[in-house]
Image (cartoon, rainbow, N blue to C red; front, side, top):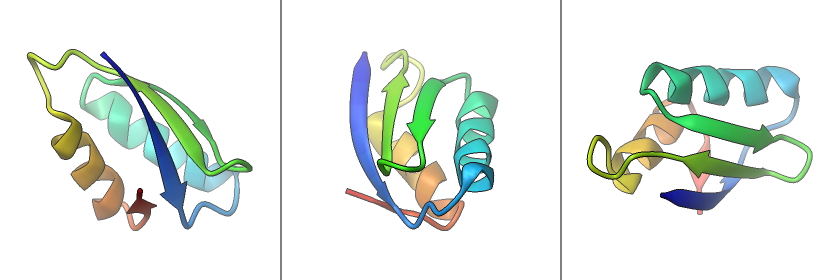
Length: 65
């Protein structure tokens, strides 16, 4: 399943890498754009939920819309 998110609080490439690494640890493929404040996430909904993914991003210190 693909999901597009708006993420607030990203200001640089380090932010992008932090989020992508956290999602990669979950086995989730992502493409984060810190300049646009967006993320495209591809995941298996049988293994993880959208809410769990959002919680990981929030735990890293960002806001998800």
